[in-house]
Amino acid sequence: MAKTIFAALDVGTTKTCGIIASTGDAGAFQVLGVGVSATRGLKKGVVINLDEAKSAIREAVKKAEHASGIKMESAYVGVTGKHISSLNTRSAVAVGRGDRLVKGGDLKRVMESAREIEIPSDRRLLHVITRQYILDGHEGVRDPVGMSGFRLDADAHVVTASTAAVQNLVKCVRGVGVEIEGLVLESLAAGEAVLRPDEMEAGVILADIGGGTTDIAIWKGGSVWFTAVLPVGGYQVSRDIAVGMGIPYEMAEQVKVKYANLIPGTDGKTKTEPAVVGMDNGQEILLQDLNDIVRARIDELLRMVAMELPRSELTALAPAGLVLTGGSSNLPGIEALAQDIFRLPVRVGAPQDVVRPGRHPLRPRLCHQRGPAQMGGQEVRWGGTAPRAPGGTGQNLPPLPLPRQAGRGTLG
Image 1 (cartoon, helix red, strand yellow):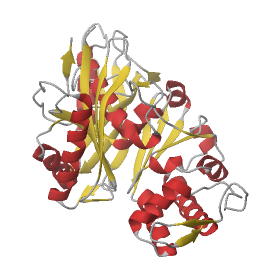
Image 2 (cartoon, rainbow, N blue to C red):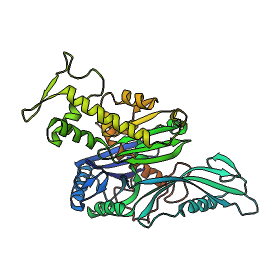
Image 3 (cartoon, helix red, strand yellow):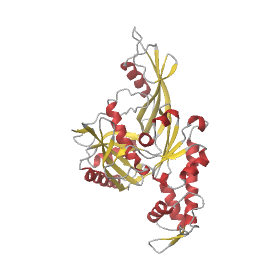
Image 4 (cartoon, rainbow, N blue to C red):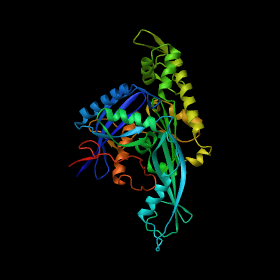
């Protein structure tokens, strides 16, 4: 059975991740190699130093290549940052043939119409995602090809990005010898990795808490309905710890990961948990002080997510609840805290159907890597930039050369 090889890069604010993976005919997703490096040169998802960013990308790529034994010549690249914006649009075309049967060309024309929105010269289209088709006023049509009608409408979710921000990211990736197969919004990538089809159909909110940004998306009726990016994430939590406890940022990050707990009553007051933790520099910190700082910042972050959502009744909009992912979703007690704020079911999402020979499943903080690569598989199945079924992503990218190995290559 032939295996299709994909590669993906997540260039985040605090870490850069690379992955090389394969999918077979049965759809099994197998991780062949992962590389992670500390990011330098980015702030809140945007490149601010080309050389430092390239160095982090180069290190992650080399680690992924070494782990997999495959050279990464091209990859799908995740995009995030406050410069991301989105809107929902509706476009329409007439079904002009005498038989009035909708054909593939009609889908292409209506989506081309959706792409013809006016955007400022300093912005570019990132995705045009079909949400549903409407045939002669009848909504909720998933695939109108072969159906009869006079007028075909399409609801689409359009995502745009800063041209300069995207160009700088592209320049960094290509600067280390990796060509770009496509750009993928981080929240879409995370959703592909951790959400279940039934959740996407019923309505679900995704909050991906990264290092410098929190990516938000809502799925409804099987396709994306809303996306947004907040310029806050785990970095701000660690920074507050560093300032509040008078320790270096790197040490604050280690303390957060190892000791922080959002569950009430876990402040070192039990026999099994120390009230004071000694640091490598001889300094001691109180767990109660640490947890108070982390709770306050995570509570604030989750409330900012709630404020960013559309002004709708959340229980009707997202009956499947809220799914948290990203590094900070690993904090114990974050589900209960989110439930108190959103009054919705909450779970922490992580990829469940990923094969890593001899290793544990991917954790939430690494779900970005799987998402772009999986969406890369959909790009191939959907036939490049041809019209997609609802939920598919359309790229406004020029065709790129196919790689010889990682990217859209195959192994026999």
